[in-house]
Amino acid sequence: MAYILLVVFLLLMATAAATDVAQYKIPNWISLSVAVCFALYALFAGMAWPVLVMHLLTGAAILLLGFGLFALGAIGGGDAKLFAAASLWFGWPGVTDYALWVALSGGVLALVILLVRRLPLKNGPKILPKVFNPQSGIPYGVALFMGALIKINI
Image (cartoon, rainbow, N blue to C red; front, side, top):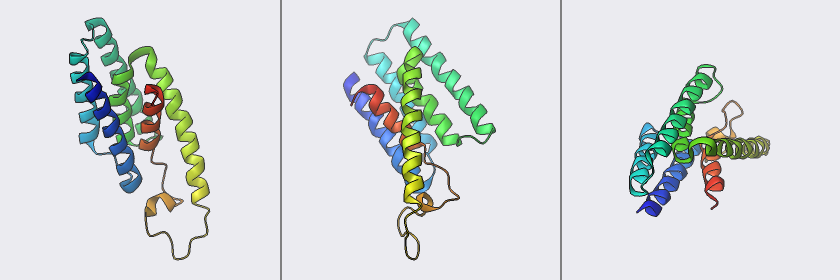
């Protein structure tokens, strides 16, 4: 059952990435589902209480950090909530590796989007108009998903 929950976690992260690219939004139900999925995983995997507490504290710390970055306008609210929910899965110190992979994936994603936005398109893009809009940000849900894939070694 624990393995199935891990797969569900990755599917939820992929869904977040897809909706972020399509709509530049990460619905709250996805972040909440990632957190609930972790709670079930901890239960079925028989996670020890001290380890579980460390995972919960890590998620809370990342949520506070995310709210601070959101208040500064550095990241979106959906990104902050999804990052905190995903951080539950990695705990401390695993979240540091996850954050590194997210940052690297986000950098590559930003470069790709900047290059795509320079493509000469007649009459503008018909699909994913926000991705091609230079005024839009970067759909960081993709980097959060990629970081999870890399951290889990898929």
